[in-house]
Length: 132
Length: 132
DNA sequence: GTTGACCTTCCAGTTGCTGGAAGGACCATA
DNA sequence: TATGGTCCTTCCAGCAACTGGAAGGTCAAC
Image (cartoon, rainbow over all chains, first blue to last red; front, top):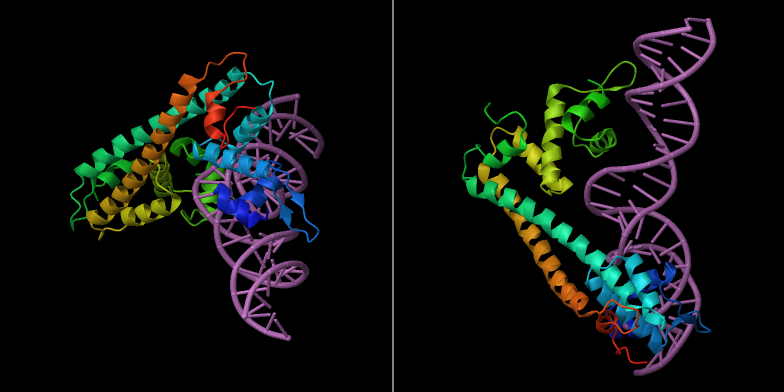
């Protein structure tokens, strides 16, 4: 299969597939004409990567997960550990965003949003107060 | 003031301050010895930037907000518009993360996390099923 | 033989810094 | 005056994970 077919079937863009090869996530063969030549297995791996990335796993996590995926002697605790750590980081991000959201939404509510210059948002950002 | 003083007082690292100068967010003067020379105003701007960045505003948003901050003829609706758009994007990010979180946490719960290879997490990522 | 869709490589850009190297400036002390 | 330590300078590279584009080779159809 050429890269275009794999891209269509796996949902991973051709550019990204080339990038994944470059960083050693997949190793397609080459046809005589120099085109990459993919097997079903390559396609499955790419779909796997696509899903893992969609769940927010980092490329390095993906590398680990792919290795576990291919290793029949894996222990599910290894997979779970990666997923749990990722979950923890997601929770951190959510917490940070929600904290920003809370502050910001409060400021937005307080701002008149009219033609006058006075603005609680700027006042909050300003270290000196907005009276001028 | 030298960059070190400003960094300590504004909470923005010296490296970051130099970067902000490079991208045109601030314009410190230069002393005879070539050192950057900052005024109180510069420090206020940097503190402003520090807070805006902490609320997640992009550098370009910061540029806009800083311009509004300095413009006495601003209208608060301009500020509010920037903040509301940012809020919207934060909400999007939160939603995305929460959706990931939901899937991931479900998978983590289902995974035994023991010494056996069977793993619902890998099974979910895999497009072909884990039976081998 | 020529179009058009495909493929190739390589380079640059994205966002917002951060680290480090190499070297000049300043200040205090011996 | 030498020396040391702490500042400051510039420049270059790297992070994550692609994405866009240029320049050019390949292939299949008409």
